Length: 214
Image (cartoon, rainbow, N blue to C red; front, side):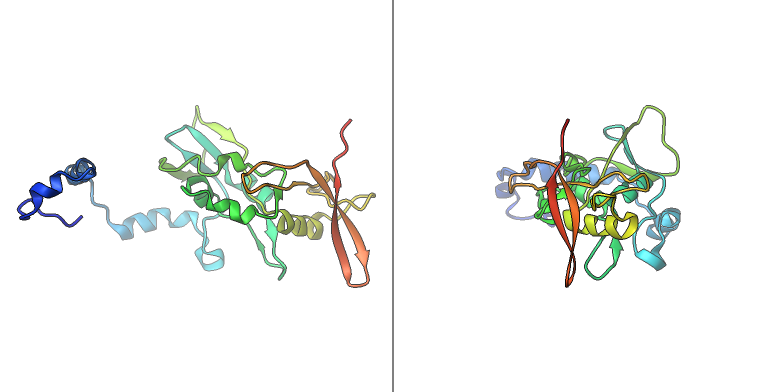
């Protein structure tokens, strides 16, 4: 960023292993179009509900122009809604997880994840060109996407959809049992589990039971 062509030590600088990359950026930056920040903000403001939740509205499509992929934001939001211990409903922002570089998002899933979690997508969109639009373009593959921590997702489903006749937490109005999985430090999934609600003197307790396979 800071070197000048007439610097006295430029010859030494050119010998650095990273010089070619900096020189490339320096030359190509001359081609960049300068944008008016206010105009860009006003154009994108319709996608935000800033006064209420300080984030993009979860509607429309998140597009990956580089890979020709798309995520339905409303579907993402419904699958990823969670509730913390204070009763606040939230969803993990998909973009930082999709574009991260250090796998730090897995710390949010340390205790486990919803079985619907698409953890294979963590970091898969890093450095790609993204855009939010109202319509899905032709020739874009629609991906299922969900990022949800194990117990906050369970808490949300319990308070929103309740339990079935076997006291299992369900995840939709149709009464589908919620499935969760544990994750190792290396990201390997454990066996899928249901969550059963047990009532105690202090309230309720979530316990897991293996998913029965036929």
